[in-house]
Amino acid sequence: MKRNTALALAAQTLAALGLSACDRHDGRMVNAAICPDFRATSAPQAGAAPSPADAAAPVDECVRRWAFSLAGARDGADVVADAAVAACGPVLTRWNQAGLAQEAQSGGAGGPVEAVSITTGLPTNALAEHAAFAHGRALLYVTEARAGRCAPPPVKNGAPAGT
Image (cartoon, rainbow, N blue to C red; front, side, top):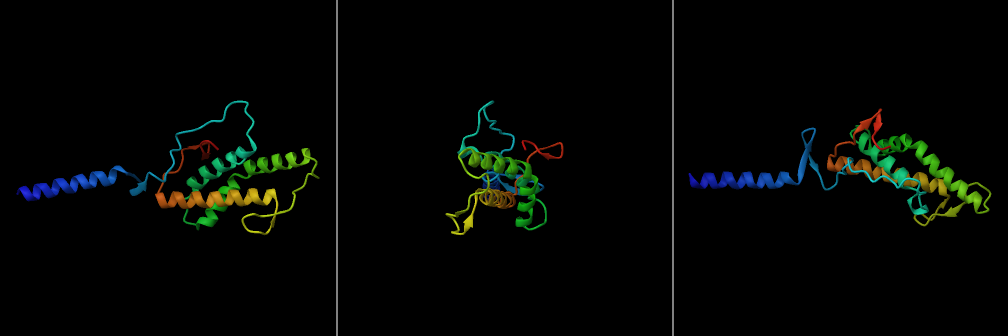
């Protein structure tokens, strides 16, 4: 009798420890170490212009929220990533326009400057790199959301809150 009680207690303890690192979403185990907390926000300081290093941040945040929102779709991850990037088209356009304006201010012709990609070695330009960045991040986030079985961010007015 004591042995059965000890085994039952050990099993309950192991189950409690195993579930303490996980949560449930739609009846499935969630890997909390992968899933972001969309309730936590880090709002930029009012009136502060983003530095060139932070210029991608609005695109990244938009793509992240849309990718986690759309990750539950049954389509392939690449299709879902394309949809997340499409949803962030206005944010990506602002980033591209800012890049073109900066190039024009520095004496450029105002069009995309061709260069060689450090990653692929192929000809590229800033606009193509922005698009590749957005798609790559979206694909990562869709895969991350699916692997962690993460809950999507809250929705406000038909879009992920914070976009």
